[in-house]
Image 1 (tube, rainbow, N blue to C red):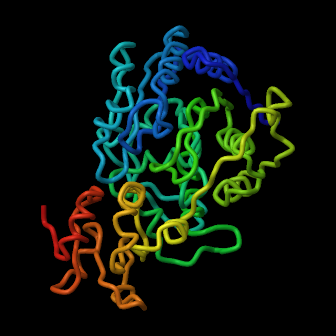
Image 2 (spheres, rainbow, N blue to C red):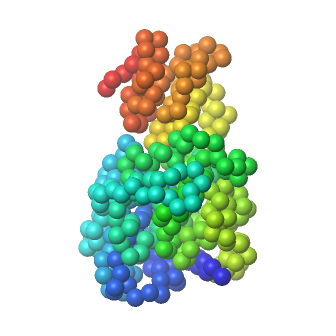
Image 3 (tube, one colour):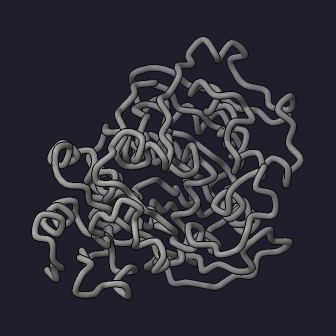
Length: 389
């Protein structure tokens, strides 16, 4: 039986403290603990983009009150985002300073390349060392939808332990998935990551969440909950039901569940009537960009989360500028081919991101950056030429 606890209320510090008390029955005085938060993107507290700092404060106080041997708080952001700046922007860095706890970019702990046992699709990954050096890792994500993976919760949060540019590898797997009916390459890649680094505990910040074009361009949703368990998968399967989905709706969770042989009926949620708090989250998919925004059109292959986020922000704030303009095609992603750069409608192509630079020429515009900011994309489209600054 896997036990999951839901604390609900308005005091984030108390919710997090109580959520930790529900599940952590070990003596922390002999343990080093990493609170692996979610600051993959730079954004303010309370936006649903990052783990809320007051949730982090509640967890810090729980472990300080129980005389933890050593406590760390950290993450490593997406490519192109400064991890320390993201921790500062989210308010987590300040909370750690106030509480006297070390806060860090996980990449600064060094890297080890590790072989994945019984892998599905990836043989090895580079990961930050700290997650393997501490005694316990607690995944502390925020509840969000995700354009590629459906949701990003306790399990996908661990992708932040991948070292630097190895984060992009799960988006750029160049083989066919073992069974496309069970999931995409990204889903299998997340499942393989869990064979290396499955968290010891999960405490999910479901206070201010995000729906729609997550993980970076969605809309905040107030749920006022913190969900915890010794088992990250059980937390995530509970969370997606609170988000209005069926327990088998998310491919990467199904694959992890299959690997770990967890049955839905083996998850015991407290309180048992937890679904009274559920609401249906608006979802997003990769195709929604083209369905909702017909110009510019999009060609994407193998894009990482950084370019994905930049494109979401571009469409969110600038799509109306091109509604009545001549057709243009934006192409991005590390796996583009020359054939992808000849749209059927003959529209001009704008390449976005450093990984597309190999296709730049006198007739194809290129927007430099890893990732570029939305304003750079606008300038490139409008200028009809490459911008190098």
